[in-house]
Amino acid sequence: MSPEQLLGFMDQEEIAVSMLSLTAPGIKGWKGADRIDIARRVNDCGAELVNRHPDRFGYLATLALPDADAGLAEIRRGYDELGIDGVCLHSNFDHVYLGDDRFLPIWEELDRRSAVVFVHPTTPEAAVLAGIPGPIEDYPADTTRAALQLVVAGHMTRFDNIKIILSHGGGFLPYAASRFAELTASLHPDRSAGSLMAEMQRFYFDAALVAPSGLPSCWRSRNPATSSTARTIRTHPPLCPRPSLEGSTTLKACPRRGCRRSTLVHGRFSGD
Image (cartoon, rainbow, N blue to C red; front, side, top):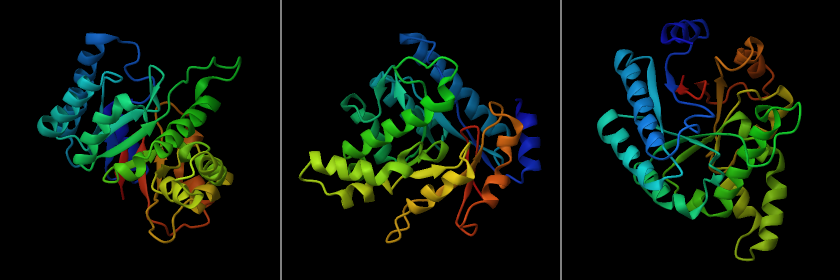
């Protein structure tokens, strides 16, 4: 999809601004110095598109993880030179998940900058089931795995200046949140199920490829005391079939039409 085609789609769907990002598999095919170089090139391209259409596009940067030093350098270049709006992280990088201690410097820098972090799933280490490509089942499962690890690692409270958006309704997290909280608390006596639920309620969710039947779990994941959890409405061109791009169809099934919402387009976050 060209920038002109995306702008046409945005006009058709009444989307004012889109935040551009690189979705999975991202730059997984490059290694070492080549991965660092391609991340810079991708980010330069994104920044150039924003400069050409500053009223229509923003940008979430790609990082050459799991190389934390390279990731830190690109975060600083992105914010200080390119003017990025946040970063896009995958659920794992070469099977290293986001709550791993190797990524602590990344989270510390993102927290210092009060960053927006969009988490998009990628293929887990497990073998893909025959006839069931990764995006069908493995992606929501890997989103869930990455998000739960961030909660158990304490990142949702330690790095509370960061806004984390989980793709595709947060995978299975909203549906199984109480199970995760209660069983995790049984293994960690210093943490209660209630506090773990509150940490999971700090996530933001988008509704891309979320069936209407799945939306109630997202709504119920909201923390009524703080209103800290928001939902976003998101479309996903050019990777999804046209019917799934009609976000209004899913939104009409939402029991809470009046909630504050935003729009994501193919890993792009935009407020309306």
